[in-house]
Image (cartoon, rainbow, N blue to C red; front, side):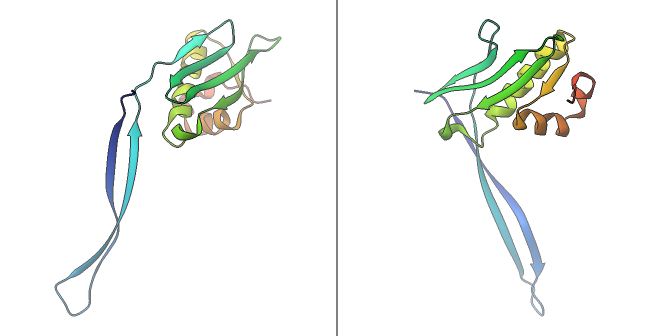
Length: 129
């Protein structure tokens, strides 16, 4: 059995006053998110970061280039855990490791590329091909 925290957010999407009344029409959006506590493990021998989840393992794989850069080339998250931020957590773990090792990274994987474009704090370690 895995532990999972479910949070439902109620977001006001649009609210308007109805003409000639004291009433308002409010439209809400509901979004349920799941917080899954997980341990991310760095397997240097297999050149990957992974987390064991119910239904399989999520992983971020990489290779070491001739220049010594970490080339992040693939992410995988089991289907039943997609859309819950698992890939972002793997990518962040990989980037934090690279930063701590003063290592440049190559974002070959589209997930990693998107993440580093949204997080400027990693600009100093990104090596664009």
